[in-house]
Length: 156
Image (cartoon, rainbow, N blue to C red):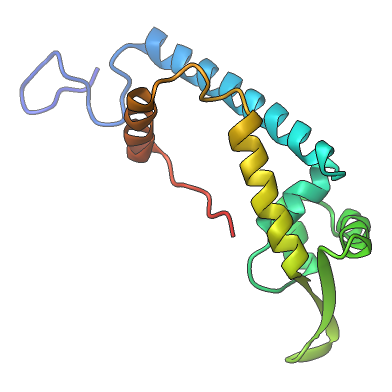
């Protein structure tokens, strides 16, 4: 254990106070991530989206190329073509010529795609099981603690 300011009982910043507790926290975070993933998958499925379609739609902000989208999703570029095709068939995205380079097509979220994203977020919040067991005060406490250790994901 690192010593801070002469206090031999205080762990250094970033060092777990109790290794067993830290390991349990990591296991709980992993379980939470799996629970959220299940809630999201069920919500996406109820709106006729596959998990990759949901991920692509949720990660799109400003217009981007399919290659950029593949990088964001950590997918192979060849897989993104089919995902974008299916989103485009549903009218959720469209491909537009990049004004800077006419050889490149940009993927742009349509107003229908923006609206479906809002519906998905609402479904996850209403039907999800993640926060059900927490009171309003506990949710605020959790939010405040998470703000100390996590960077929020921007949901465009």
